Length: 218
Image 1 (tube, helix red, strand yellow):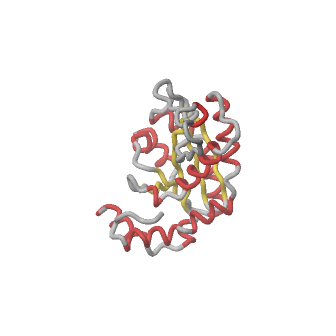
Image 2: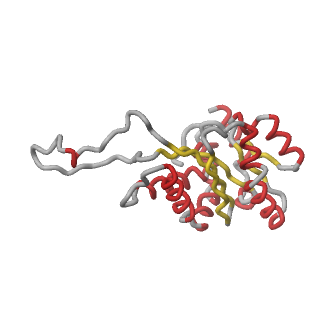
Image 3: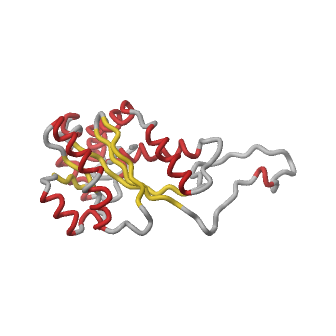
């Protein structure tokens, strides 16, 4: 809480224009066949154990995809599928930082001037290869607080994306189908929704400041 309060002390006076110069990045894991929502079942007396009234569980052999994405005010950024055996710091630089993120950053830099890239404190973001790339390409890194999803607007994009996948009449049957579904749902993340999230950052930061680093409604 103390770290969050200090962060809020430093940023609660930022206006929307300041937050619009941040590229928000994050990664998330999406599990095949998993619906995290609460499921309600209407059944008749005596149907408690009917297979049609039971949500199946997956106790082993679970499969998931790790994906990385980014957003900025007025833009939905690229989405990257991160192979299971390519998630080290050097892989992050090769697959994301030196590729789609760099292209996205340059486009926004040419359009708006100085931009900052928000990265969390994951080891792949703090490795020597990533730091060298940041320094050599003069990328300003906007460090994100640990365990603070309320201060990263892209978290809401992930939530809507997963809800969209779970709401499909037919769930993906394999990882390749899941990847197709993820991309389709990502494309549905409209700019107006993204803008509303980023434009709420002054209120989010003020809420953390008022809560003295504690939890907020966001």
